[in-house]
Image (cartoon, rainbow, N blue to C red; front, side, top):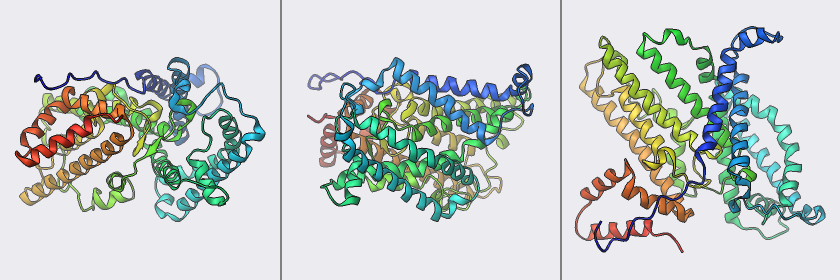
Length: 461
């Protein structure tokens, strides 16, 4: 470090402890073990019903409780997150019901109107009524009435203790009623948060059953002799962990857990970059017939490495490792995982090594599993196209990462400190930063880039 350069600050403390995600992981694995061994458990306790593993969609749905319960308990009993000032709750406050009722009624009406609009959008969007989305629509329909009913006592209870009960939802309600002044920016924040929950919540619920059934029904004894099958089962398990913990994150956005959505990404580019990676838009871009299809005549790693057992086991281990990093990146969030949102700053786990471990590991997995430059057709055109289009997909994730950084840099001084620390010390980020600076143009453009970097790394007052 040069004499004029200030000493690097320490890595900021994470807003989420590692224990939250680990508690959810242990709860999920315990439920999977119960489901796999249900025939023996039912027999031992003379329980009614079939003597078969619990691999159905409702068992996958029940897994959410086994993940969410331990995470909520750890958050409240160990981390005591309900006392964080970021919750916006003052537990010593007890407003009289008569004083808060006008505010709470507006808020409840706003929530009901929001859910009705989202329900209407579910109804008119055709992709929600086919394939795996049918399960999500069934779950949401069943949950709708309890959600509407329970929202009343929850809002009344919470408003008595909130420092400022006129939150985003209240401003939307005030806009609907037209009787009180409201802030349009607060209304936008309200809708960004609920669009994220509505869009991604339905998607996550829809993909719960498939992977869960595969893991519960997997024949573990047959895996030792087959690296391909072993890697497939382990990768499925890791994806189940990712999906289950991630779904809890979208659904459990409660202030007492300090897990509420503080802001949704306000950048249009961030939304575009994220939404094209998910149904239905992903099919037009990255699907088998999409514009960026990169698996044309690519039989994949198992085909090209067949016959070399040692190399196949090594490659299978590499793919499992990458998927484990991807799942770890989700588990580290605990109950705060979701796309396009700011819900606190993570600095532990894989986020100590790179700012975007999930995107990095996911893209490395695609390159390593697909091997797009090796094609069964023998056509150099196929190889060039596949390689180019997968590079385009990776570029989309790079763009997506940058839009997320722009959002967080504008929201939290702690993230700016974390961003600066990672530039200097991150195991993965530091060499990439050094390479970028080495390749950066010299002269006036370099000076401008340095000023921009210094601005990004300087915390706001």
